Image (cartoon, one colour):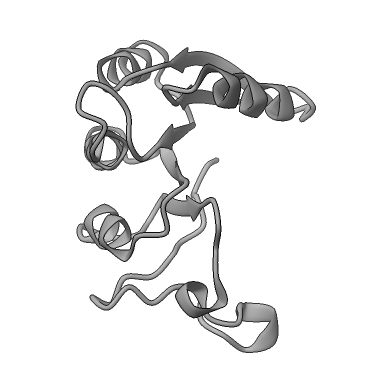
Length: 141
């Protein structure tokens, strides 16, 4: 069973992601968090296989999800992290992936062909963020 922690300051989004994941037989949402401190406490307590987090959360609503993703991958390298965002911002991608791409994914709310390329099934690239960053699949066991 894959253990997942979900973090987003929007209750409806957290509950929606939890409901979708509940339809999967091999996934258990072990905790939800509404802010960066809550996310880090949940990760420390539950040691999940995967974290799904918003890019912007309290307390500052800037890049808490990015900071959390990098810290989680540093402290728990077997934990995959998916960063969700309503913002299509290459700076977030570069910041997220500057230490490497393994176990990380950035999923913007409105992907565009210009940002993501044509996609691998049509001969395009996964992601070009200007600094050699590339999107990676989440390495969850």
